[in-house]
Length: 129
Image 1 (cartoon, one colour):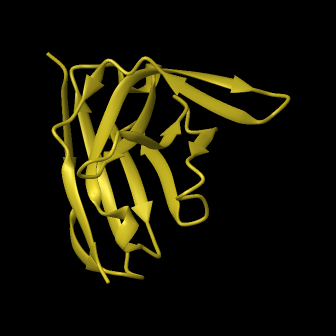
Image 2: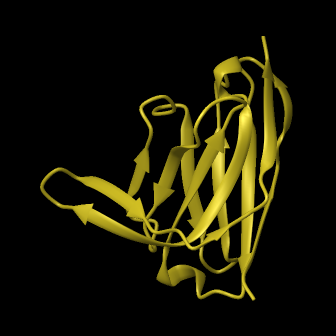
């Protein structure tokens, strides 16, 4: 049975930082791409960032590029999201996704992640102004 457990959310002031963690068990973690998604009240879920199985390629949504960094430690079956310069618009429930497929285009240097099979319950991030 695959388990995906996020942690690290909380309340932070605008301009502050948080680091989310996601531990995956029951899955050969380093066989798959992994990612972070978020959903704010009244809005659709959006992909924030994803990372290839090796950690060698990553994708970021334009809204977080330059402020967030996704990384993974395959020895610990753990995915991270370092969030800096947080804004009130970053307030959302953040979800970790595992078991995905990553497609890297060498010509455009763009990673696309799809077909995530496993999701966590989410961790709330609230940024106050």
